[in-house]
Amino acid sequence: MWIITLYSQSNISMFEFDTEEEAIEACENIEGFKILSEVIYFTDSIRLKPIYNF
Image (cartoon, rainbow, N blue to C red):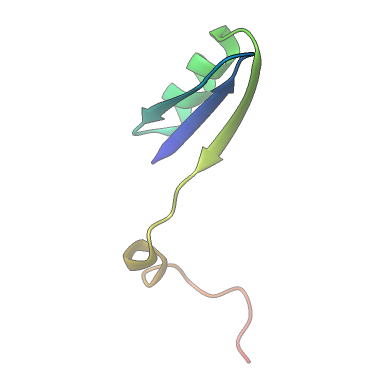
């Protein structure tokens, strides 16, 4: 899941997207100070391959 957090003078808005492509397209069209974040749930991270094995 991808989240765009938009900050304006009086409020904060958050927009949720299913794909990175959707989020990037929307981010390019939104005016103002914004942060694009990827949300990774713990259960999804179990399926990821580790970068390092200790």
